[in-house]
Image 1 (cartoon, rainbow, N blue to C red):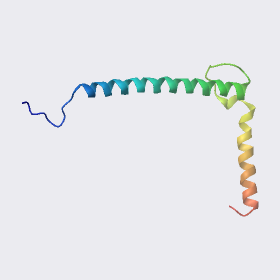
Image 2: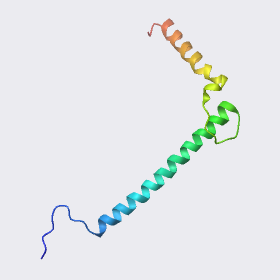
Image 3: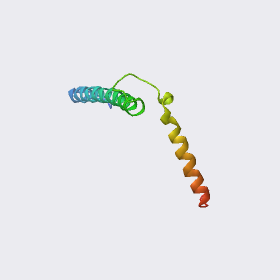
Length: 83
């Protein structure tokens, strides 16, 4: 009888490795899909275009909105004594 060491591998290890490669490939596909959806909705909301091309929202006039909203919230919090 052959004595097996602590790091002995069998067919089950190959099956687990194959399943993990399959799950990793699915996760990579989902990540690419999510990035495409982010590009699509950025173009739709900021630029009003149906496109998957990567664009920066810095050219949109809506960039001022987060700055205005943040300053409004800070001024209200300061007025209420929270800051």
